[in-house]
Image (cartoon, rainbow, N blue to C red; front, side):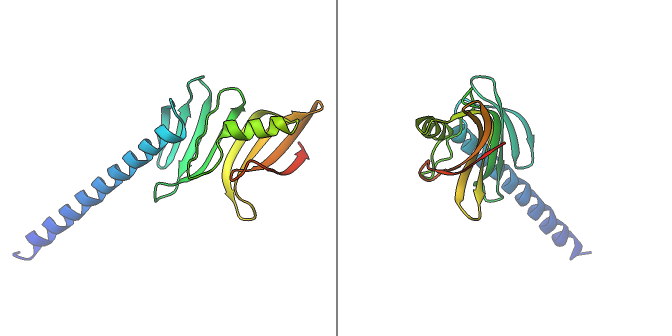
Length: 151
């Protein structure tokens, strides 16, 4: 009996520490969200996945890795209100849309931000070129067009 009480206390202390760690982790992710999606409002949270509305009332999703770094992000309003500022020297969604525009391409619709094994961090952006629906793969490092294809 003497050994059971200290054992139970140890288990309770450990479980309370892990709950506190989860809260700290969540607060880090929420703090990162304020930088990644400025003026965004969280609509729903499911673990490390967040759905947000932007200042222009568009809907976006951001998912984090366990360490609190961004894993991927997506939305359906490229050029119409979605905002992504991934940090760490990577191009913002707005900068990528401008680089596409300079190249004569119009971003419109769905987009995603993720890490590609072949190209590093990239944006996949839907758009139009000469009236045809297109899909563009753009480097998040320098904004260069990696690949384009008809959608």
